[in-house]
Image 1: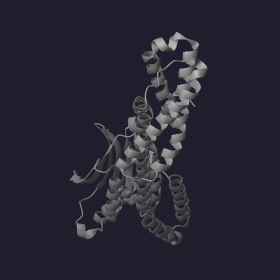
Image 2: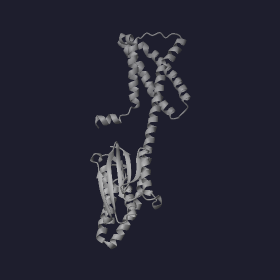
Image 3: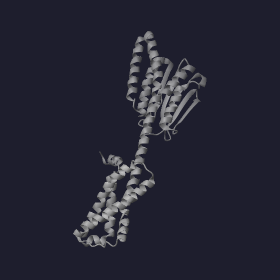
Image 4: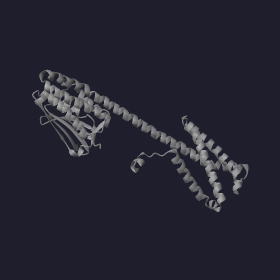
Length: 348
């Protein structure tokens, strides 16, 4: 794994926060107790053990907090709990210091019971701050993980919806193709064999993209080319087509199979208007920062009564799922051509 991938996938864990936080705390304490720290090696050993005890105590209360955190109680409950545990930890901390301090010949004034209570309460800020940071960081990380899970769930749902909508295309196409092959079997067995081969090749291609949502423009063009080979055999001279594309966008990704239903609709409605034959022009280009997919056929716009519009509806639903509102789809009639144009955000 290279350094770029490492830092991209790097995530802070409990130990990163634990070691980093204690390093910062001990550094500031050494600076604060500068004279005491450098006075003797006994003082250094004494302070080191003192900090080590609190370090180990925070590791113990971590497991208590982990259990309590999962209870999902009111914040006030945790605040009271943290204050109580912090006082207990500070008291144990001070009592242990009294036990081992004589071995290091460290002189500190213990004071009265009142001053002892004061010292315990004052020292409680260390476990209290640690506890607040623990709950805060844990809550923040859980929130981030929840967002990631929600995002992953949404992506899976979107992908499932896109695949479901894409599969709605296949039955209609399969029905028409098989009917054409059946008809050619009696009229022209040789052409029926060619069409069956192209049909099988197209199905094999679609299976390769079964789990893909987005594909490069060049692969979308290959899909359309295979599809048009079948339609060309089916309609022969009644269908002529050309596919145009901008070389600079061939690696850009667009929604898989987004142009196939547009081409299918263009052929279907174009031949309805012009039974003698149509010309089809498919163009993949770049307009500003958008990828433009345009399918144009000779003819005129049909009234809504002449078509159920299922193919176009399918396209719109897939675009909504994949791009939300970040796309445009227009239908126009220009220069004896009916044009369907889709503008998609550039995606590499």
